[in-house]
Length: 82
Image (cartoon, helix red, strand yellow):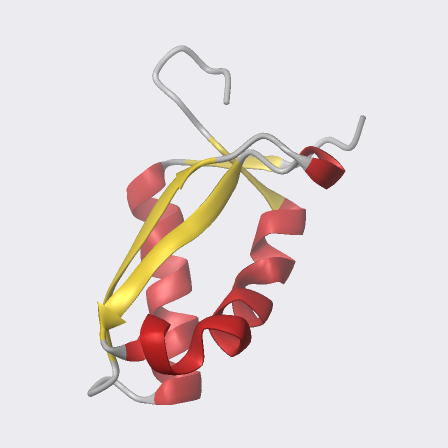
């Protein structure tokens, strides 16, 4: 299993927000929400929303933009497990 750095939900959301605002502009991306995920590649989180309208307009591009962070960071929970 791949060892990834642990990040809290607010930390991951802030990272994703900065990246997406840089790519699509702050008028399209004002917030990002992530949620737990368990699926292929052992990822522990996924982006569930980016708004106000960015996720609707750029869903595939937004998901692709944060994929590198999914590959490198795990969602840290209060119990220390994802």
